[in-house]
Length: 232
Image (cartoon, rainbow, N blue to C red; front, side, top):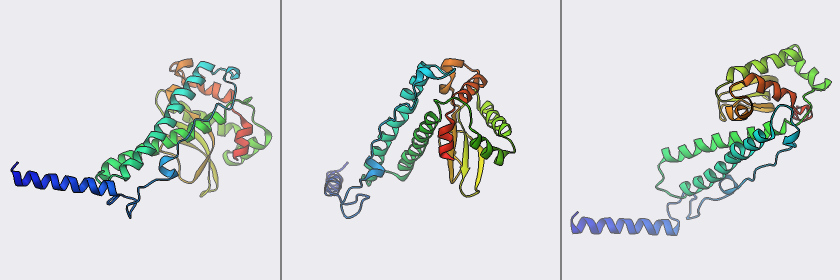
């Protein structure tokens, strides 16, 4: 590098440093760094809404590990990615493809946090659906048993892999339907989850190994149908 080119490089670098320090070129505009709850909100994990010692067929060890490592890990990751997004957006040199990679992670982590919270919230019950819920599901699926049969079948199809099964109310279609989800980011559009079942192996492997069907039985034995009714 010649003295002239080296001097030009140093001057350009110094100017860039001054722009960053003064806020010029930041995504917030007018020299104001980007901030706000969309970026810096730090979520705390919700406690388990039931006593894990009292579930039928799902061990306290499994529940604690699931809550602490998988759900808790997703919460921590979401908090981290929010801060990384803010930092990246405030750095004018961040390439768009790098930023959209962070946004993809935000989508996945958000889905994991929300679905895990819904999942834990619809556990801890007797597994016995009340007449009102049974009537509503029968109204959409013909019979309550037909709904349960399809929900279970979707779960069995996900056994040994990853994903979620949700009973959801599609607000646009005005319909209660069962949905297959391959991961945390494949949820049906404009749909409120009513009943959520985690089919990632971490949800049952510790208790049942590869026997996903036995886990599904245990899940049904612990559904909190009062929570499901409130979502309906």
